[in-house]
Image: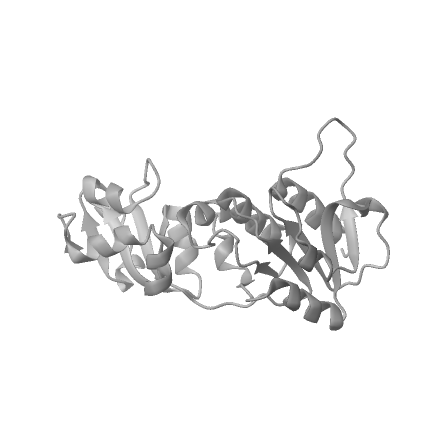
Length: 252
């Protein structure tokens, strides 16, 4: 174990830079915080570059953690590295591991930009038995601190792809026999859907603009949830959760 006490230490400066998307992309690294996320990371295929431990948590360092470089940091330095207001005292620096969205139950996010929505959808997809997530080019970065926290570890279990052209990728899925389901306010009633294959991809659109015309054009089904009250629409993550669970219920 190594103790680092200065905010100007090169390692500390690097870890702090990972709050920025550009730095994450250039370095290929990101940070997860808290015991649950670090535990999930240890069980994943992601390479762990370093484990960061606040000094008062030194007694909590397990033999499993010592397989990796462990750095002890005073509270002021540890807090500067972390994004959360009240860090739990442990974090890990990971290197990206490329994954691919595969399998028969997919969800596509067409430029969903709110980090909480993206992370919650990934977590719900994992819980509902989906196997992969496709991300449009303007989606929130899945390795940002807010998205990672919202996934609650599901980021390590889901295949995730970020195709250069989401519409073209959906077109390839459709041609291969997938049902492509676009959630949109001008669609037909979701609960009256017919002809959905046991291989499908559900599309969730941007919070403000919905599913883009280019992406909607690839759909085999355009569906809307009923709005029986006065609300005009649902939060993207809530709508995704309702649809995902109902689609998987059909296949149980």
